[in-house]
Each structure stands twice: as C-alpha cells, then as structure tokens.
Image (cartoon, rainbow, N blue to C red; front, side, top):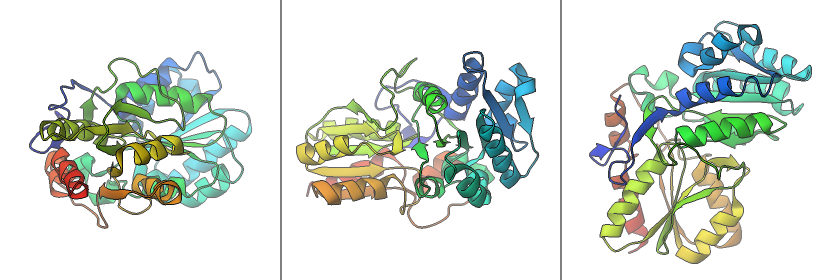
Length: 327
C-alpha cells in the first residue's frame, strides 16, 4: 500500500513529504523500545497482536504480554485489573472492536476508577480499505471523548506516534491512542520533539485561513495548503493530535488571526475533532467554519485510495471547503 490518495496524487506528494511507516507500526516499535525504561508496562491483546503490533513488544518481553483471545470486553477488564496492581496496562485491538464492543467495560473498569490503562485502537477510519465497514472505527474518537478522565490522541505520522506513545506511558491515567493501517507521509522527519499532550503543533503558518486536522488528514491539509498558496491563499495548518484535552489557546488564536477554520478528520461528522473545535470557537470567537470528514454514513469495502476519494477525504475537498469560506 503506497499511501492514501489526495486529490489524484499520493498523500503528501504536493507538500514534498516522503512516505514513512504506518502509525500502527511506529506504535509497536515505540512500545518495544520503552520496555526496559518502564518495566511496569504490560500488554493485553485480543488475539490481533500481529495487526495492532503489540506482538513486537510481546516477542521481546513474553512474560509481560497477555493474550486473552477474541474477547475485547474481557481484555479491557483484565487490563483494568492489572492496572489496579500498579502495572501500566496497554491494551490494543481494532478501534471498532475496542471502543464499540468493550465500551461498558472501558467506562466502568477504566474511566470511572481512573486506572492507568492505555487503550490503543488500530485500523481506525475508512483507510483500512477492503476489510469493510464492520471493521472501520469511525465512531471511536467520539466515544473516547465522551468518557471522563480519558485523554484522546490521534497522531499524524510515525514520529508523532512514537512521541505519543511515550507521552501516554508517562501520563498517569487512562488514555486512548488512535492508529491507522496504511503508511503515511513523514511530517516530522525522524522525531517530533514538540509533542505534548493537550498542545497542538502548527506545521504551516498562514494568515488567511486555518486548517485544523489530525491523523492522515494532516498530510492532506498540507497538500491543500500548497494548492491554496498557488491560488494566493495562505493557509495555516495545525496538527491537533490531542482531541481531549483540546488546545483551546491555539484554536482561539487561529480564529482571531485568520477569521476562518476548516476541520479535517477521518471520522464521522458528529462527535469528533470538528465538534470539539466548534465548541471552542462558538464559546470564544465565532468565525465561519467548514468540515471535511466521513459525514453521517458508513463506508464500504474497497480500495483505500478509492474510499478516501469517494467520501471526500482529500486535499481537493479541503481546498473546496476553504474557498467556500472565502467567498
């Protein structure tokens, strides 16, 4: 899989970005590399470690890895039990299986008691392609954000994922980390030194409009910014890698300085990044807004690039959204 399409080109191509690892692969490598530094880390897997990449950790630390089988609800309860004994329990599955199947267990065994469980949802969004809608996590950010005490992160590339993994391990309390299946462009090169929970990163400055994105849509936003620049529009691009707690200061600053905001995310229209940004904007400095997302529907099985095109998750659609605000 070479990477997702963006307006007829490879994602990140217009912005001059090189293709890197999938965020799920970066997660597996990062967790393994932190094993010696944080001996309290244990993994709890639902028999999909080869997909979520927890198997990378398990191969190095077999005595610190538990596979409960295809039983996500039990998986979360086991993770909560381990966390209650002082372990840092990292439990991973496909985003839809983790957040949809085990929501009640997450609510009562993780969020309510504020246990140190690290929830990791891989294969999020429609870019998993041929696996189809039954395995596409497109409600997960909304569900995770609805839970008190849970930090929600959606990194955009391998370097920011590795930084996010360290941040979630160092954070005391429950977190949700959203990961993708396809390879994505390298936005931050080999390292993302500016990553901090609750603080966004401005990856491109501009004064005419702000594009706030996360996940693979950050690369699409950078592609769109290049097209907009050719049209005489200078777009600021913000990587809002933490949806909860949201970086209110960056949003307010963008609203005041650029006067228009487009939010781009690989998620349903309701309840995700767009909803959270809109809350901040409406409360502080109302400006015109537009949204590029999956909408209010489920996708289908298909080629990842074709699905992103069909459901409008492209640089081209971001450009259209920006221009609709500038009329």
